[in-house]
Image 1 (spheres, rainbow, N blue to C red):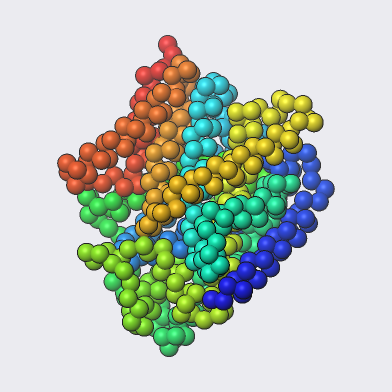
Image 2 (spheres, helix red, strand yellow):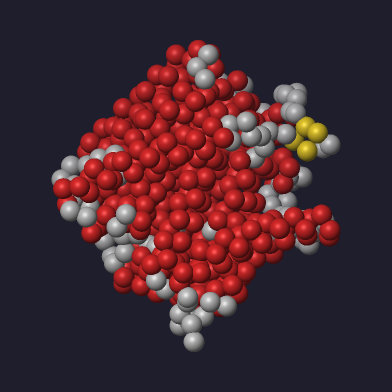
Length: 482
């Protein structure tokens, strides 16, 4: 694709975001950056959250993942739906009852200050790595599409993207993001639909034959019953439910948007509607994945593989869209990946800033005249953190989505254990020892998984989060006060 066209598309899109930001930020209250003045329309929030969850990783990684893992990822999506039911009917009412801005304040009232800060720090680490890895994928694609042509290094690309995000979010934060996410979700779903129809026309498929091509293909295999496999149904389904609870219900990034709804009833409708939107979107991307491989085979496009396994599958969708699908599909893909990357990074930076300001700096107890200055400094600080992580992983290959969920298993497991014990027991803890237990549980989970793989050829896969949460709960019970 012509680099001049690429930069024109990105510039036009960014100007649109700035206009929306200006509109959404009007008449903002003092706390709008953190809670959106609690006036967001629930349906708008639900649709926009799809873009934040899908991100550039799902947009690119899930279609590419199909070549090695078929439709097994949808087992994980099915588990997600169960997790979202728990969020809607258990967590959302709890958060509204306590009138929380940072959801980790629950740990303060339930266990104590050390546990509270421990939960917030685990979120900070998890979200920083997750957001940076999502951003990395988008940066690599922008590098491939535009910046390489002008010999601009990847660190400059990353800085440019972070500055653009800062420009439209630093003023009104979550209040702006609720509106920009809606636009971004629309673009990334439109890009997937255009890619599907482009392949349909290129291969001269009718509507019925398009469906048949997908459903009869060898990759259209949803269930995996092999107990040793990391994609086994029970591992994927159970971990899907737990990761949904951990990565949304216990994640300031996702819940901060939900808590901008007017009341608990609207917030619950938001979560339930969002779960259906998300399941449909992820199924759509899996179907697109089958068609991408069918197209590559039909056109004689060779894909790099080793021992029957496709390598660097994250490059498949970008490469076909920008080199083979034509100008319309190329522009749609570019808008989709930019929308997905902005949508995930902007909300992550806002959530990290909110959690750090409320949980660790106690900004609500600071003088009003200093709060804005503190917030801006923290926001810039997290921009620097994301930049450093992106640079650290810039040479990585393979499906980044697998790496994100692998990291989440170790970092969100202790959070899940803390909340389960806090909500479903009356146990009081020796607060000062909680950080030790949480760190030990995460390290022990890693060691157990590596031992199981090397000794029994048994991979916990995404079930690491279950093992981690279980070890956390057992360790915390040893800290029980008499």
